[in-house]
Image (cartoon, rainbow, N blue to C red; front, side, top):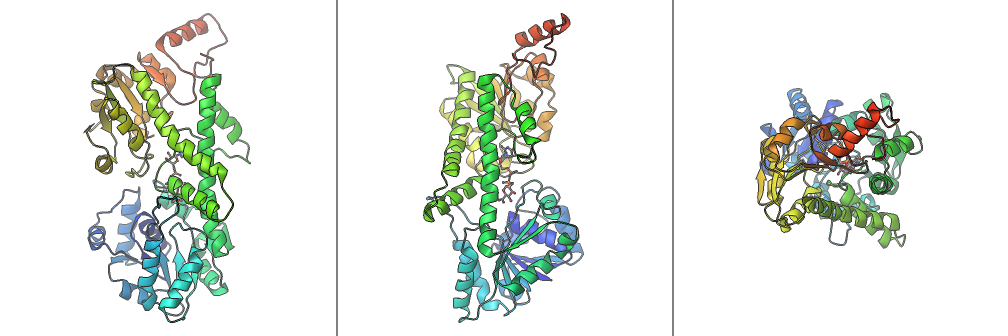
Length: 461
Ligand code: UGA
């Protein structure tokens, strides 16, 4: 099929490349000619593992191209996807102006049988509204508008597309539904569940899915706090509850509060939809408030551990991106935590394998380092904010020698407490028992004398 993707951002580029991989002819169109020129030269506006290779391969096969010429691309399309941004408005609702502009721009060039598919995350009723808008532009010659939300995680977007848990296809007309089903046939034939429903349900599914996942994270963060108070271990609790298939083990890792371009924005939009529809989403409203608070509280904990006076103290931040395998800084915990530390007089050295350039735009007066070891040099304390795989295998001896202080705060629980403490460092993480060198010694002595407390991580220290 001939597919046009309006918007060559994160979702548009990934979806476009994946549809080309399925065998469709795809043209990604964007108003930003500089962006299109860069992509054409192989310089992608985002970092996503495997995407550059997928784009190059499909361009080579002649199935994927990039253009700023919207009229020419749209006039030969069977399906036009709208994959433009839907930023948050100050009241939490989303700004649909880019979607509406895209709809107006494509309207005059559509064939009567072209299907419009909204890929952007939009509030319930948007597909119907876009259908009306296009009909007005085309002197009441309507076209079908479907809703096909994406469930792509940054960092694993290609795998999420190719091995999706499900495809959600919302359409209010029989023919539109059939066309969308034909587009995804290669995936459905591989056994991927296909949920065919109306446009409003599809729009609601997207928000409800993200709100539910965000709730899981908020819940496990609360459980982590509880474990700290009750001397429990959140990893054990998460494993114990996650094995219940009704709960599931995914999204039960505590952290410094969820961030990124989706969960914060989508939970706000979900809550705003609730207020607008007279069905207030109090669970989600509380979640949003607690998630914001968590970032500030975790900054306070760092300050407490630094002690007074703070001025002249140095903290090394390992990881600034909102999660690993991305350079995306949107709503990253670092954006709240770093300025709060700086405000208290703390000097910041930082390292991130990918997000230095994107983070530098927002974080000022930061001493950027090329490795975690240079960031650790003379640091009074180290804070891990992003779960980059390379931080799991830090040479802790090297870190201990480079530091001025002794403390590592791990807000992603990626280090092995025992190993950190064995290097003479003090370690705190989320929802796990605190382990200090003297406690480690005590535990080792107990183990030697035949005490039953041999598993340090699980012992009530
Ligand atoms: C999320 C969803 O997972 C995708 O399914 C969805 O398509 C996407 O939003 C979207 O709406 O476009 P993404 O924002 O890329 O994907 O990132 P996630 O992997 O979901 O992580 C979101 C945040 O939650 C991150 O800050 C991450 O660190 C945090 N998180 C995630 C935790 O703190 N704990 C976890 O167990 C999982």
